[in-house]
Image (cartoon, rainbow, N blue to C red; front, side, top):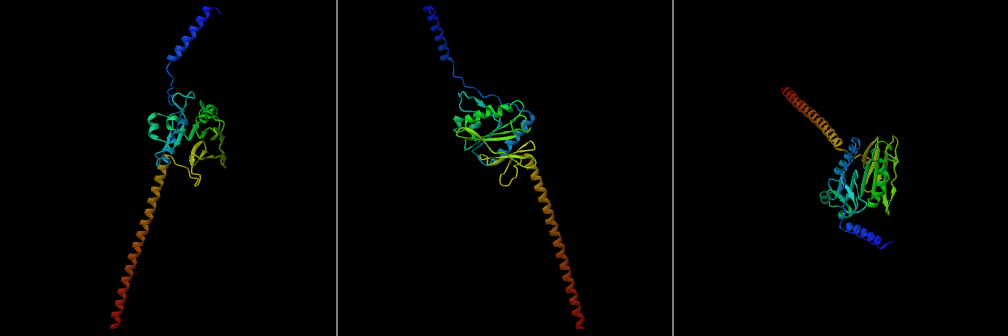
Length: 266
């Protein structure tokens, strides 16, 4: 290599190095919230609204969807936007103020993440995202496919993180096609019930109700209370009638006895 060529190569390297030094550190901004299809959106909103209501009494439980998760601001793993994320023992207000879940800032990874299948993202959920959530340290990762497995590899699946690796959570099938698995993190059963994602109390086997079901249940309970009140009112009216009849009969009996007494004195 000639001296001129070496000088030109050295100058090129110096120019590149200077450009790298001047280049600002790239901090990725979170991707905008994804726009799920109407069916996917229904399942996401219903699931999260039920969990928000269920943990409403706890100020340290974060439940959200549509926001990003990332390890840190400049981590090369970037960020993901889950359909549901749950974290226990965290500062909820601080997370909401930051518009996202940055694990280094929160101090711990989320405890639970759920993805709902769609035609465009289904395969990514059980391949790429599964590995990435494990790298993020998410304790439980669940996947729900309302189609029964057309977009995901299965209708319902859950994984729990052990030593940095996801291990499948057992999924049970009941007569009639109900699929369910127990979430140790939520302490609830996740159920695939006739293409619907439901949460169930593992002890009582009762489903957690959405807003419409709660309202309907409230109406039913009110109607039942009204019927019970009507029965109580009718019982009271019958008791009043019986008491009045008894008083009248006793009065008539006293009158007859007095009449007989008067006749006997004559």
